[in-house]
Length: 201
Image 1: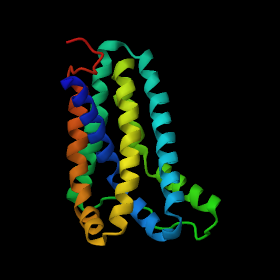
Image 2: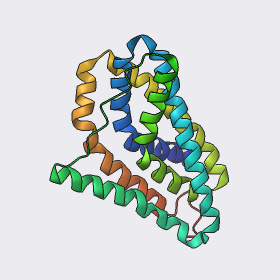
Image 3: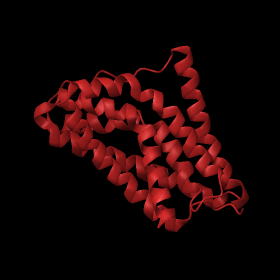
């Protein structure tokens, strides 16, 4: 039971670390298309399902990597975290996309939300690809539903924050400071010989 909780916690942590910026974007999208909030949520979850599927597909490449080297994939999120820390120190944290399609047709809104998430999710794909590659198939069945559950939670949370602007401003101001440290912790989890690790101790 403890191992299951650890895997769920690591997956949720990885999701939070790589999607705080997407959460802020989603708040903006809810605000922009306020009367189409259900469509925005559907577009977001669709985009996240696509990102999850890509991560699984890339993670399958891990089957062709010698087992003893899979744990070293943890270096990937660690480097992402260190890079984010360097950007913060230099004051060059990359800005987020702020322009969205002006059309209010259902199709345009849906496509805008999906493409916005896809264009801003390279770190999610990289991190979760490493996590899937480093884990047993049985563990993947915990990672995947946790990823989906976090997507639904974020869709609801962004809607809540859109109606509580003071909270969304706090997230926008301080959220990116947490991201590097969570990514680094996820990286060390992959490097460690944990319940989900394929590498021998």
